[in-house]
Image: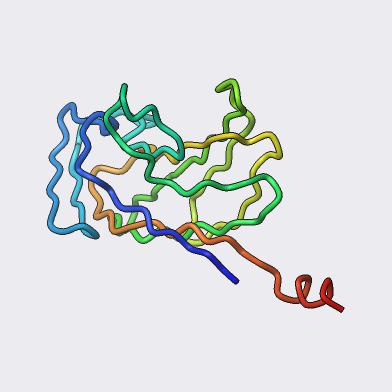
Length: 153
């Protein structure tokens, strides 16, 4: 059975690059972003799998994943023709030490996280973009049905 989660851009501004940014929320699945002066490499938006709700006042927006599964990320985002998006999944161990990362440059990317992953973050990073429409991201747990059926035999 495949599980999937949809991740939206919530209106939290604490994890969004606001300096010189013009952000318009047309709907839950349509966020328009403009910023002509943002330097490349800047984290535009960040989502978390675990948070301290009392301290940060935001809830986790990413599903919990484990190091034994394989996952797929599907990005629904519109950029200008010569511009490209860059997402980065950053994995952390129990002590908040970075355990690895995966760069996402394609609309569909498959990944496995490190075995010692305790939490992770999804970062939208400026790779030279000046404007885009963000719709949503789907994170799917991929289950190989041939493996599960052969295990039952």
